[in-house]
Every structure is written in C-alpha cells, then in structure tokens.
Length: 208
Image (cartoon, rainbow, N blue to C red; front, side, top):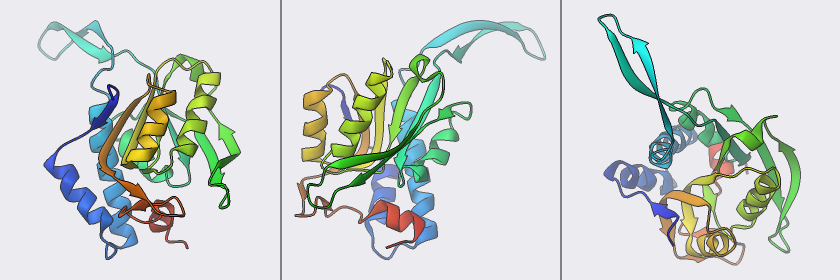
C-alpha cells in the first residue's frame, strides 16, 4: 500500500504501549494522545511545499523558506478532538473543521450528524484526525465528504488502525495518505480493534 505509513519510532512504541494499558488514567491518556498526535503530524507534514522568501536577520539579509500550504485539521467527533492540540503545536495557523458520525450498533455503519468546515476548505489540504480506524466506515464517509468539497490533498492521522479498516480505505481511496503508530490484526464482533486501546472517546473524556 503505497500511501500507508506506519511510523516506526521508539517514542511512538513507548507511548502507544502506555496508551494501551488499562491502568493509564484519563489525564495521562489525554496527554499521550496529544503527544502521539504531534509526532505523527511531524511525519505527515514532511512533504509540505516550501516557498523561498527574503528576510532580514539581526545581522544581514538572507533567503529562507516558509510553508506554502494552507492546512485544515478535521477531527472526527468526538475522539478526534483529543488530537487537535497536539497537531496545532506544530501548525498553529491551521484552521479547524469538525465532522460528527455515530455508529449504528446494528449495522456498524456511520451516520452523519454534524459537519462544519472552514469557508475556504477547497483551498486547503485536509488532514483528518481520529485516534482509531476500526472498520474504516467513519473515515470512508469523512473522505467522501471532503472530496465532495473539492479538496485535492487529503491525509489521515490515526494513532491505531485495524488491518481490515486500512484495506477498506485504500481500496476506495488509494490517493489518500494514512499515517499511524500501529496496526492490530483483528476486530471483535462489535467492530472494536483487538487488543486495541479501548474506546478512545470514553478514555479521553472519562465517559462510559
């Protein structure tokens, strides 16, 4: 899969292990989600375009480079909200959109209940944030919605993915780049990743 990237880094291995541990409390879990998001965002933005500009330092004039892309981070509610600050640490000028889906527990299919995107979204690179890709249903719906808005460059940052979910996404959208810290091999009967990290939204917001 040419556009699928598992970021192999000791810090990510360590932090993902802490994230998996059921003894990790809400405060630590939130911090880990944010830290992992920052590390993944760093890798996901390696191919941003640069423009050369001339600036004046305290000592002289020099030519240097600035990022030329306009970025929008688009968390999938609600768990994706936990990733936003970690990404904004690197790109504080990015705009934020929000997509909301809930899962029909009988069909496991996503149902849209909210969509709010920046006015100039078609002029931006869209980076979708969701801690977990399980079946891939919500992510497929998010990608389709963004493509309908004429976004040409779409990326996904997800902390943990299932192999099935990745295959479902890449079969339909092989132009979308996916960045993750890990992949688990199976889903349970309810569509949750095994062994996974549990329900990311519940662990971030301390709800059940």
